[in-house]
Amino acid sequence: MVGVTTCNSYDSNKAKKITMKLFDVYPLFNIEPVKAQGSWLWDNDGNKYLDLYGGHAVISIGHSHTHYVRKITEQLNRIGFYSNSVQIPLQKELAEKLGALSGHDDYELFLCNSGAEANENAMKLASFHNGKKKIISFKNGFHGRTSLAVAVTDNPSIVAPVNATDNALILPWNDEVALEAAFQKNEVCAVIIEGMQGVGGVYVATDSFLKKIRTLCDDHNAVYIADSVQCGYGRSGKFFAHDFAGVSADIYTMAKGMGNGFPVAGIIVSPKFKAKHGMLGTTFGGNHLACAAAIAVLDVIKAENLLQNAELMGEFLINSLRVMPGVKQVRGKGLMIGLELEIPAGEIRDMLLKEHKIFTGSSSNKNTIRILPALNIGKEELTIFLEAFAKVMNKVLVKS
Ligand SMILES: Cc1ncc(COP(=O)(O)O)c(C=O)c1O
Image (cartoon, rainbow, N blue to C red; front, side):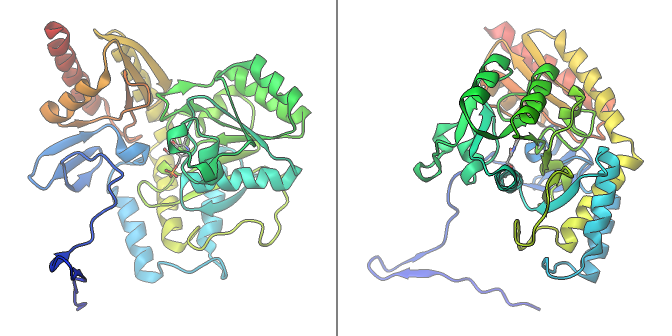
């Protein structure tokens, strides 16, 4: 039995016990989930919630899926961790399964721990590959909070002075003319783009824009990086949302849905990149437990045909929402949906949560609700949401 010791500092001036607090960077709901199953959560008072947000788009195969729990538990009982200094066959199994399901068997996998880290590694690899420095990204995009990832993210309030760099060129979204001009003016190392902007409010990259990126990267020896951290892993109905354009990226970055809540991320890289020992690295990336979680996710996506379910349920939800009162626009594909209202979304989300116990997501577009449910959600659960949404909208629209 491990003893629990509380360590308290002692402020001798005030003769008062000081207890360590959390660094307060998150606005939190006053809800404490203690149990979860599929698309449902229960809090410590026994209230049941419908989860249409999956904790920032992370829950892909549903909470506490039995196959997932079993695979992780069995792995933990054997070995949970060793670093990338020994053979870890689970990594190869993960790569094989990922290659098969994503349709990129000829790409190679590097494993890490978070979306930002995946993007950092992708941009670093691009620069190692062609020796260049300028990275193109897009307005309203989000790529993470670490050094270069945050520098190419269009949100000055989260870019610290030390992260700011002339190497980031942030261009208008879906603007082919501006993109072409930037390539003429600059020695471009890479273009990083979300297939659908998530945090920005679910804006879809046009097929024509992604094709243009492909052509310009080919013509100028630049690297096309598909940030699939949020829109990837089947969420759009295809394995990568970028697949709709019918051209391949050089590097795909992934995280969120990859581990269904277990922190695991990765990049897959085309055969044009040559690996060198020491070029990339991480202590935790690709550990036994992370691989077990990621393999379980792929097993379930395949066995339960979740890409197809995401496509069908997405169509049902998008078509149903488009005809509802107060809805200005419904954007997205599959189960990544931006529901833009004619009124601010904050009050509507609050009412959905408080009056109907339904979690939804916000976005930087203040009128847009993000809907990012588990990929195995069914019509029954979505209908519960549609009915609640109609009630809330009616109530608010009648009032105004
Ligand atoms: C498209 C995209 N890229 C990167 C990230 C960063 O991922 P993480 O928070 O795991 O570092 C996010 C997170 O929301 C994201 O949506």
